[in-house]
Image (cartoon, rainbow, N blue to C red):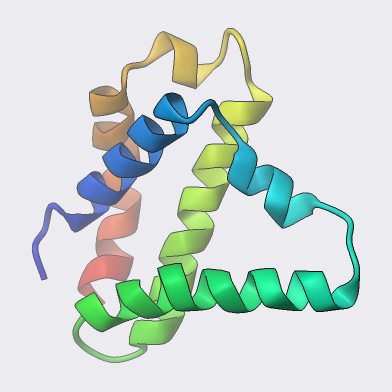
Length: 111
């Protein structure tokens, strides 16, 4: 597995978040709704994010590691949203955020 995957994931998340205006994913994750809607959102998220990521990983516990990677990216997104307008996301560019956050993902990526 490429050592740069964690950095790539962070960069992609930050750049897409900036391009599309912020925390829409967080609004979906924390939204109130009927159980059927939440189940559908969870299933779609699992299919479109965690399952695809797991397919790119090698080694044991691929699905668990993929879900934990997705959770860390969601946490980063939450931190960037919560600490506006003067937090890390505004003081620190995407490349530096990726440099800071990616090492924490490396262990999960490599297994």
